Image (cartoon, rainbow, N blue to C red):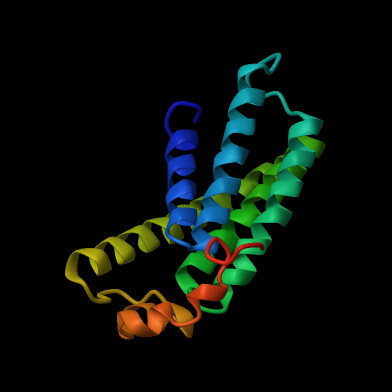
Length: 171
């Protein structure tokens, strides 16, 4: 996690923000930081499989924080919202397992983790095909601004940019 997941998601977060996509930037930033924390706690754990109250509380917080990009994505990007929402649930369940060491929480987190794997693989495939073909191949549930980004011309996408964070003088 420390050598692979954390750096890739950090780079994805940076490019998300550079691309002015608050959902991608925030979501990937939260994931990057969370995986870094999990890796560090795992590296310093007294024994393999040991639980940690601190990690449990952190994962509950990470799950709650993941709801912010989820809500933002839900208005225009259904597949991204599904990935972020499932991630929030997975973090919360894993956090409860860390706090209680209960096998039920661990099992539930594992099941949701498998669902998350399926949703994330679908999202990756759908978005990769969309990029390769220049058009949607698999449904990704774009609505509103998300759909406009693919269908409208550059002029429509630049409309109002002078009021956007990073362009105007102050936030």
